[in-house]
Image (tube, rainbow, N blue to C red):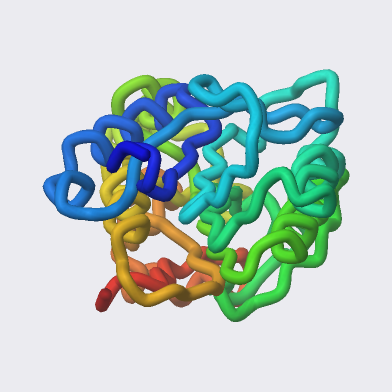
Amino acid sequence: MTNARQKKPIVLVGRGRLGQKIQTRLLNSKKLSTSRLSVEFAKISPSNGLMFESRQSGLVSIDTLIICISPGITKKWQWQNIFDGVEKQVKQGLISIERALFISSTRVYDGIENGVVDASVAPIGASDRAKYIILAEQKLLSLCQYVHILRCSGLIGEGYQRYEALLKSELQNSVDKNLNKSKTDTSPRFAVNIETIANKVAAFTFIKSKSDGVSVITDEHIYYAGEKLSFEQGQYLCARHRLLKNSDFWKDS
């Protein structure tokens, strides 16, 4: 048996804009070359589960499963069904998953109108989209020994210019004093650069100790009525608005 076959795979599902960044970090990591790990890629199907690009059959013992599919994308399937096929594979003994990382969304907090929301706050699933993502999170938790859920705020950076342009537009409009919305009807916005997420995911993948939990990731700013505030500067807004507080499980890792 070759050394390559002895290595346990890190399996990445999703190679969109963010997924490609994660792929690059994993493959270029010096830790990969000195570990007993390999990087493999798979697609996911609600009926068939994980479909590996480089494997035809046989038991797959996965070190880390990384799920990086945008919860905002509408597909023929719903998020509450996304891990049904994986569940079948686990029950049939076709795959085993030691730990998983699910890149989720702060949309799960839909329905929380005000107050500070960090990783310790339970989502309520007020919208259908939030409810379905929560169900996906819960299903994955039942399939692995360790699961970390990374709930990301609005994405900015390469490939995500639309949301970034919106933030910059509101900032500029405020400077020009042409902002139509008043501060009483403007909701705070939150953002995180995809480079930050890719770096965190790659770092997590090579952490020796296993861990599970939830992280809420923002760039630690509040974008409100044309102003870019630190969380401390904008914390007064929590009486009327929901504020996402960066609560990174791995910040000190």
